[in-house]
Image (cartoon, rainbow, N blue to C red):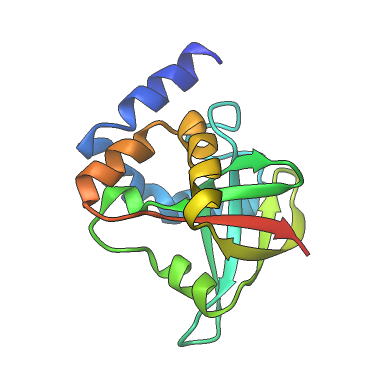
Length: 156
């Protein structure tokens, strides 16, 4: 892991970084779409990221959000941390309503996935995978006072 990644991971624990991150999400989503996932705000080498597209549970429209992920065999683990806010992000409610989604990886490769909310022993198994990639998730749990939703995305 390079110095840049270490700096980003360290900053992730700071409240101001979470505020900045929330505000940069629309720009990051646009940037990843325009470059087929080759470029992100934090830089591709810093953290593994993907674009998750869900179907809006109320609107039925596609909703896309950039997320950090941890690999898990052929699958991917993502967290609904919402940058440590007190409420769950909308995309996680979309996945609870319909488990079918699409992820886009670097190079513009789209993969249909099925999402499963990790609970119990499965959550205990995958939580260390995501905190290894982004240790600030533990800080987000403390800050938000909620159990952060964790999803395992499996190619369908």
